[in-house]
Image (cartoon, rainbow, N blue to C red):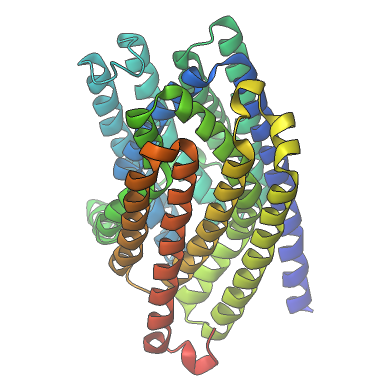
Length: 436
């Protein structure tokens, strides 16, 4: 009876996450259509380059803390220290956001943004706000994920997608300029982060407001996070190289318009692949980590099998859909200026992100048992392959060359992550339970 209730609850949670992710994904592609109609490729490209740098800063200053939160919070919560842990994590993440805000604003004011967007103080303030609200957003969404509050999590993500459409459409209609699209991302992140961090009985701010961790407890949490976070910084940087550095090569060898066209097409194709796999990850990752934390290796092995099989089936289905209907998808979801060569790029990016979904599944399974520092191998392999192919193909073949380089990088990442996972299994005893 209890087992049946757990299965029904998991199915219900999966349905909630699926509905929310589908709606958020649809809102995202509607936004791409709207933005490509209102902004020419060079405007979309310049905004993409600025936001890509901000994402790099997030990986360096915020994500190490919030990724450690995902792994460490279940054990702290079960030990009765969940609220204290969350308070320290929130303070550290906001501290990282403040550092990123100063770096972004300072770089813009000193002229590092020239050649991209050169609005000086206006853009500096927008980037500073974006950094701080991104930190709050990351902690809040990870808190909901680890507490398995799928309804609140999907509501947050869906409202953020809708807010981006509203803000982006309004600002680009007023002024089709890169600053408008950057400001829209900041306002969408800020409005939803404020709403959902305070909304609900168990909202993040209400949980941490009453926590009073001692200095010793705070130092222990900081030490645990620091051990996890240092390794994450380097492989997050390598992951950024694999997923976004091709945009900067296109800007260097071609122009911002090429970046805009490639980014818009890639955003559509990647969503079609990553939306279902992200939905699956939101449901299975906390359960997988919980199984690893309590040492339930049989449950862990079963979850890995289910996750792997489902990711492969979803990837094949999404890739087939993209290949068969690429022209139709581009005609509906992209403005005319963005459609040239979209079919080939969309198919290649779909293939690339299918391998990325596999790699993420292997990494999550490995992280639940393995040592994060060892994952640098797969990241170096993927980043090295991507850069080697991109430097060779982008100058001659433009966005098609960038797409091929993306495939090479994610194939390398998935291969390296699988190799690490298979090597880790015998030493952790999972293989003794029957293997994956």
